[in-house]
Length: 467
Image (tube, rainbow, N blue to C red):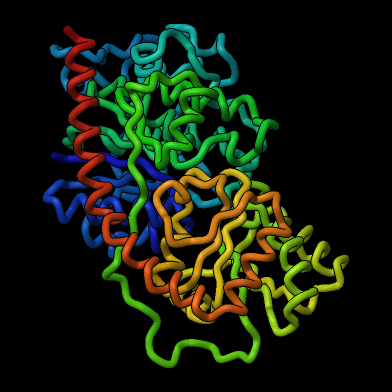
């Protein structure tokens, strides 16, 4: 099987949790004998592509083929449709900006401005993308190109909705000469691209929900992002959720039928290198680690509040906050206001060996997420022989037993559990001993096998719809 994956992150270019998941999954699919094409929204060094075919804007040297202006795209999702309509005119690529990085692609048409612009044949609409959208979801489902500054935490910022629109156009252009059997779109930024490409190519679409707008923003959701997520889930042939927790959100908040959703837990590469001997930084202090985006979703304020309570009982403790995000300054100020500024160290965003070194330092890892679809970092901590405390509001809590669990808001209990791990070596040793056993079945190979089964179900659904 040949899988075309759409994603915003892929190591070593971005090493966030989503990027780690994409990397682990593609390597596992490769080991299982499946070919993977991966389309990124920015120019990258293709030498890093060891096990996949990596496509990005700088590989687009030729013309963009589009239907004649004013003509409805003739590609339709039925058994008689070729992969791409051959009746194209050609337009040279222009420059656009993807998250601040120059890319050698832009649609020759103006950005979609409103629902009316998407009317069939109207000047300004990109008929290729328009036709794909109408085929899969009805006329003009999303005003994709509304230029608006929205934030999703972490390193995501700027005109994200516009970038999702441009990425959709880029994907249709880059994939025009590629052969593939299924489209696998990771998270909302790629859903418009997946919908467009599915409409043009006639291939089944699987969307992978790593996070939702309710995870990122609580009940104060950005309506336009929610609409894109909802349309993506409903347009897809199958939906993959990273946990039962996330599946329930898809069902209850997005009205996705239960029968359409498959739960595929993330995994971990147990063969990854451990920190080299001597890499551990020695310290007389106990180290309690928070590693992740410093955003509302990850609950950093609860970590700081728990730190205050721990320091009332144990003095020789340092709290390391590794990551970056829109709440960083606020958390620095909060630690200072609490009088523990010298005990809380902010490292900024870490990657690669720096992540391994900080795990090597840690005596305890805490993941106090307010809403965590999965939580790969908890698996990484266990892999690095670190006792783990996680919030009950996380997907990973469904599959881990030998960790300590606490409600994110219960900072007193969180502090008690941290103190217990630091003060009682038998507890720490038990967590370290039994934790790795649980990782044996949480592998990327297992996740990839489940994804392949989902691809099959997506193809079956598409065939049934055509019949």
